[in-house]
Structure formats: C-alpha cells, structure tokens
Length: 413
Image 1 (tube, one colour):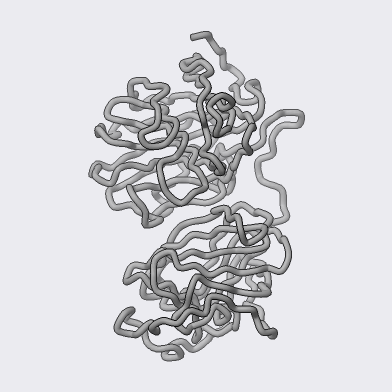
Image 2: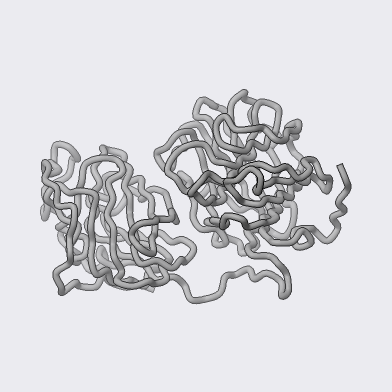
C-alpha cells in the first residue's frame, strides 16, 4: 500500500532557528537546492506507511534550511544542520499510535545516513525505538518500521553519513502503527508477556534492528532449538550500524521493565564451532539502560573461553561464569527483579535446567533509567575473526512455569 505525502497548508511553529553556514556543494558533493531534484510523484510516495500529519516541527539547529521544509511535499527543499547528533522533532498534536517513519533523505542516492528514531509522550522523556542506516541508493522516500507505540512526538537523530557529518532531510512523516494483533499471542491464562521465538518467520516480534545488512541477523531453519526458525547473528570486523563503539548486529526489544517489576526470561544460545576466542568483551545478550552511552547494567558476555554474567556496567560485578561451549545449545532462564536499589533488586540464573546462580541481591537498573533488551552479538572492534552465534526461544513471563519447556526438569544447585 502506498500513501503520498500530504500537503501542509498551515504555517508550522518552528524552533531552533540558529544561524550557520549553508551546506555547500563542496562539502557534500551535492548540487544546490532545486538542481536535479525535480519532484516526481513516485519519489514523494511512501510504501507501507499510513502517514500521520505533524502540527509542528522543531530541530536542534539549522543552516537556514528550516525544519518546516520537511513537510512541504517538495524534494527540492530540505532541513539541514551540521554535526553528528543533529535532530528534527515532529509534534503530532495528540497522542497517537506510531509504528514507523518515512524519510526522503536529501542526497539519499549519494550517501547512507546513520540515524535513530525516538518517541515521547510529552517532549521531555524520549524512548529509542529504531536505529539503523538508510540505503544510500535513492532520494525517494524510505520507510522504517518498529513495534507500534503510543506517542505525541517523534524525533529523528542523525549521526552523520558516509560522506560527512551533515544532517539533511527533504521530507519526513510519522507512520501509524498497525491495528492488527501481534502474530504470536501468549496462551490464555499464562503469565507470558512477550514471545520473540522467530516462529513468525520474520523479526516482527522485535522492536527494531541494529544491523549493517539483513544477512547479519538471518532466520535459519538449522540449527534449531525449537520450532521452525532460529536467529543466526553474524558480526564481521567493521560492522557498525549505529556509528558507535564496537562492532555489532543486534535485535532490540523495548521491554522497559518498571522499577520493582519481576520477570523470568527464557532463551537458548549456541556458539558456532568457529566462534573466536578473544580476551575482550563479546556480548550476546544485554539489558541496556535508556541513556545514550556507557556499559549496560546487565550483560551476558564471552571473555576468552568463559561465559559471564556481569551486573552494574563497567567494571561491574561478575556474578556468574562458566566455560564457553561451542556447537551445543545452552538453555537459559534468567530471573530478575528490576531495581536500582541493591537491597531490592536481584538476579537468579538457571542453565540447562540447573540453578547455577542462586538468588542474589544486586542493583539491576541505573537510577532514573529503565532497561531494554538487545540480543545478537556486540563485541570489541579489535576482534578480526568472524563471530557467529545462534538464538532461539526468547520468552518473557511473570511466572517460572511459563518459561519452562514441556520436558524441562529443574534441579537444585
């Protein structure tokens, strides 16, 4: 289904009108506005997006190309600002269900833009919902989807592109979220709150991806721990889809567990027979805080020939470790109470049906921040060997019995 951009007939409130040098052709290799940017109907058409009309647009800054230009149905105009972290923010006028954004990047056929999308109910607190790169092959609209959320404001943050550090958007719209129920529904009467087991045949159970290409987070029919599909996560040196530290290809689920909540998480992981041994960090599952930087408060990592559970960020506390095993599925059940208070929060871990870490009180959140889940592989960028790890069966529930497999037998430590 396709929807064309809607013409905006009212004057929009624009903020952050800071002065600065215009983005010159010598900086970007682009032609000036209007040159070679004839607006075709197809270029202003967004696939898979039921567009939401913004009532206002503001930005972190501009070079004279204003935020309102991204709502005028003209590819020959744009918003531009120099510097990584430049953002443009759209007010939808009321709380709506948002399931994606569609963006026509200025010069989008000459460079790939690294960017992130976050949403807010009030313009104060923002939650990340998507991060990735544009294709770099078209100046026409591209649609990026994520798990639908309720929000009033949608912010696009640009972290540079493959040519320079300019942020330049010709047109952008928020997309309405799907109204159909999720493809995987927990059993009636269970405490299951989310399933990410890939049995939909896609990554649709997850909120977003951070990957350089689809083959890095591929669904495979072998090896499997359960069902028909598992995730094969591959990382090669240089894989940096969000222009940050380390190399990664990860799935994101915006769990954002409230302070004081208690959950069980089940999943299975298998490290490929060629998985590299390196005396540095290699994360295969993490609960990251919703701040912008720093080590996550909860991380499952490989260090050398050892698997570790580290709590508290860097340096944190290693609360459990076990030898790295390759070529065999490892079944995890992770029991957590989420709290920044070490007397309230706790962790407990089962591996292959055995309690390997009895309940231990420890802070599992950073003060004032919630966490979200990231799965795949994220590692130090000094590692040159290809890393492959498989994931299957991700489930989140409030009761232990709802994360046990039908044949599971738990044993005491």
